[in-house]
Each structure stands twice: as C-alpha cells, then as structure tokens.
Length: 227
Image 1 (spheres, helix red, strand yellow):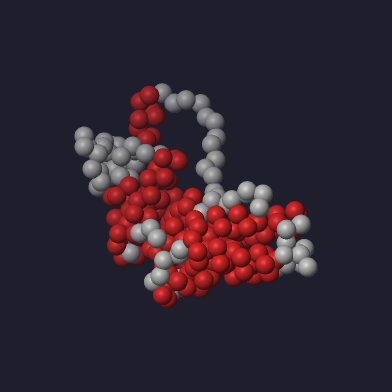
Image 2 (cartoon, helix red, strand yellow):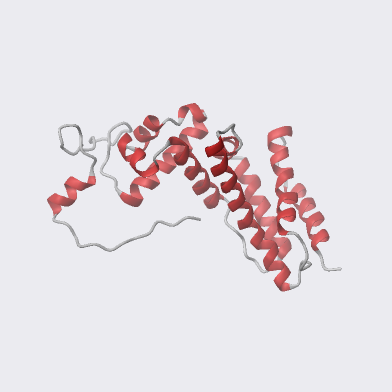
C-alpha cells in the first residue's frame, strides 16, 4: 500500500499559505470555495488532502458510471479541485485510474496475519468476495482487465504482479512456520484461490458464500500441506 510522504518545512505566513492553497485562476487570483462546498467549485486542497479527494472521487465515478463517467474534468469537479491539479499530479487519465484502482483495492483487501495459513486464506478470500459485492469492486475489476495500449498494458500487468506478490506473502509465511511445503509455489496457490472468485463474478454472476470460500481454502491448504 502506498503511503504519502511528509516533509517538514518552515511555516508560511498566513497570507502566503492562503495564496498557495488554491490553484490560480487565469487572472492570477486563487479561487475561493463556494459557501455550500458543492462539487464543481475548486476548493483549497493541497498535498495529501487533494490526492485523497481525487482518488475517492475517481472511484465513485467509476462505480456510478464506468470508464466514460470518470473523465479528468468530471473527477476534478467531483473532488472540488482544479483540472490542472489532476494533470499536474498524475499526468494522464490512465495513471490516475490505475492509482485509484491500486489504492482502493489495497485498502479493501488488507493482508491478514493471524498465524494460521487456513485463517489467513479464509480472511483474504472473504474480503475479496465482499469487495466484489460492492459497486466499486466490479467497476475497478473491469477497469483492470479493459483493453489497453502497449503502455497501459505494461502498467496494468505491473499492478496485477504487485497484488499477487503481496498475497504470496501469506503462503511464504506459512512455509516458514512449517504449515506449507517449502517447495510449494506461492503464485500458483494464490491464483488457484482467487481465480474461482473472479470466475464467479465475471462469468456466473453468483455470490461468494462462506461455504464456497471454505471449500477453496480446504483444497489449497490440503495441497500445500507438508508430505
């Protein structure tokens, strides 16, 4: 999960800080927020607060209306920031969408560490099933497999590789504790667990039930068990 870095700096005078907090309008003056704070009026957001607002707005728009709804201008309006701020921080719409995807999934799918392989896998799959049952989950999943150019495909592949490597930690820890064979393939185990959940959502439209999760975990834990 990515974390925002904080750097110390000398405190600015109040008037200088106020000028810096908003993006300048064409006449060089900062835009003030409206009294009611409605979307569409740029607000005085900077740094981590601005990034959080933009990422959250991106996910909301994707969930509500899909890719077409999450244009840079729409995201900026929904987040209450200037469109130029979005481009300055992300460069392209694709980079923004990919970061929103990674940020949301990493928060929705925390990596468990219970000390038990079976329980870690059960919690991981349960969280993934709950994620797929939200409006945001399917929208972000479809984004992650949408047609892409060579450049965007490379970033998408990197995203999935990072998520899978993150989940592999559960299997590696189990091998260190003696719960899994040392020669077991962590990637194969993770894919064997997660693929059926994606298939249920994308192909069958069926819910991920606790019984289904338990059956998958039993199969994989049995295959990983030391001989």
